[in-house]
Image (tube, rainbow, N blue to C red; front, top):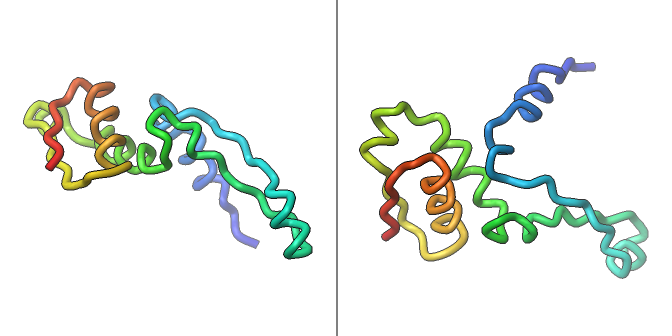
Length: 99
């Protein structure tokens, strides 16, 4: 058996929780019944930008140096990633250009 305590600690101490909210797991009752197994849906649509993409954008941007944040970020997206980058930039006091 592997000791995953370090990995779990990294998750629990992640800065992503500065911006992301804990979202529930909801059972997909009809699908669970149809498959004969319990199916859970992680409700990332309840995040501030309605997507899990916020987690990745913020996690990366929060690791940028002060100099990198001062220079700003550029993201190529027309969807959820762009929204995640925009909110992350706002929270981190960084300029973001979305193309």
